[in-house]
Length: 220
Image: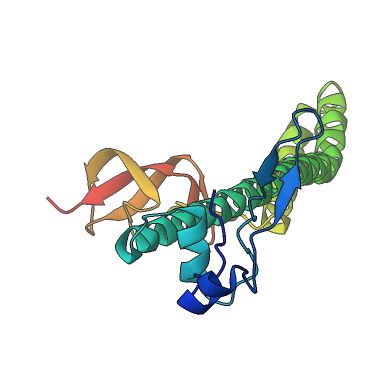
C-alpha cells in the first residue's frame, strides 16, 4: 500500500511551532493511542502507465506490452473458439439436410423405377394375350401358329420401340463390333456382312443394351 504524504515543513513552520497541513490521525478506541491514517492510492487517473505502476509496481513498459499482447491473443483465441463452434453447428445442419436430401432422392428413384416397371409390364400384357390366343388355336389348326407368333413378335418389337429400344443385328447389316458379337465367320461374297442372326441385339441411343449374336461372312 502507498501513503500520500503531506508537504514537508519549512523552517518557518518549525519556528512557528505549527504546520499548515497535518497528517490525518485517528485514536484507537481500546488503547487510546493516536494512529496515523493510511490514504488509499488514487485510482482515478488519465494515464494507463500510472495505473500499471499503481497495480503492478516495478513493471516496465516492455513487460506491460507483453501483458497486453498476451491478453489480445487470449481474446483472439476466444473468438476463434466461438467461430469454430458456429462452424460445427452449421456443418451439423448441412449434414442433416444432406441426409434428408439423399433419403428423398432414393425414394424418388425407387418410385420412378417402380413406375417404369409397371409401365413396361402393362405394355407387355397385350403380348401375353396374343401368345395365349395363338396357343389356344394350335389344337384346331397348327398351321395358324406361325402367322400368330409372327404377329406377337412384331408387337413385342413395337413395345420395345415405345420404350426407346432399337433392334440391331439383322441379316444384311454391316458387322459392327460396337453392337454385334460374331459367333462364327463363313465364306461369302462380301466381307463383314451379317448372314445369320442367332440372337437379335438392342440399343438405346448410344448405349448398348444387348449385343446381337451373329454369323459374319468373309470373302475367301
